[in-house]
Image (cartoon, rainbow, N blue to C red; front, side, top):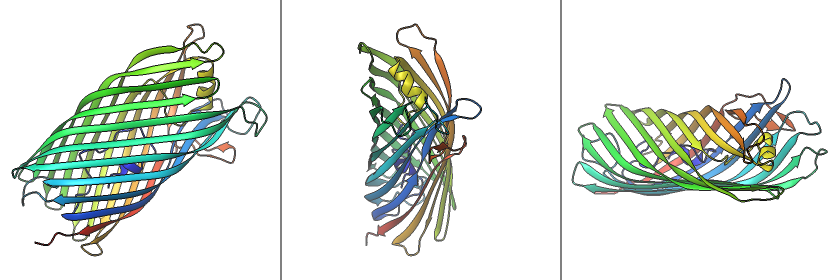
Length: 388
């Protein structure tokens, strides 16, 4: 059960062909409910922060079937497998700039997440498998925005969309107690931000590779993996008052690197992993700040560079061989540099040092910066062993 599918961060890296806890042989069903949050924030002055966050509440369902590798071969992945997962969630968005004053930008809105994952693994002899996986994560929201008027005054409506689609085709080879895989990786990244006064639509294709090494020694499992994709993203922008169309392509990249350790003994299984995620994109797909909202309508173009760290913990306990409750936890924190460039080349460039953390927004007051993004969930793994 990949925690990436129920994370609030749509554009961050995710497991496509890899996994955390090995699925048991036979038919397998999954059901989980999770709460997730993610935020972005900057310091405006000594007493005000510009903070924006999003909170989806996921229902995840999954179904699959696995055929184990030969005894003693590999690091835990099945020789053959198919699996489908869907994670759907309503979400709430909130943004403000501290205790209310005239001139401050605030927004609130609702949206949804529609995430899907598909995996197919085909055995070729005892030691090899061909793998095909896809992961699609999407969030859309409609926000009501106040651009500095009296409190509870609606200035405009904003539609925001972000999507990441991953596809990998790979080959996995198994030796005694360990295995390695290599895959070609394709990512389609897109985002849009539309109001009555400005809009930008960005989409593009990134290509690269993914690697994974997995070993098993007794009760312990060790995993290391990485993925990097690069390419260009096409951008179309317009803004008030002339709404002159600007179309261009921007170099972009997405990459992540993960290490993990698992431990299993009798009925208990634990898997702890850390991931470093880095991106360079010509759009802000989620959690738009008030400062950015004003800049877009003044004709500024964003360039985003993020660095984030994720720590994940998955635990599973077998009450019976068929029923295995699960706990999912994710902690993440990071930084982002947003460079806003005037499309007319007149106004000076702005650089925003953004914290990628959930500076909680509630009751019109933004919480302290630097609080980590969190995902927490409970689920159950139901196994139907195949009789021999």
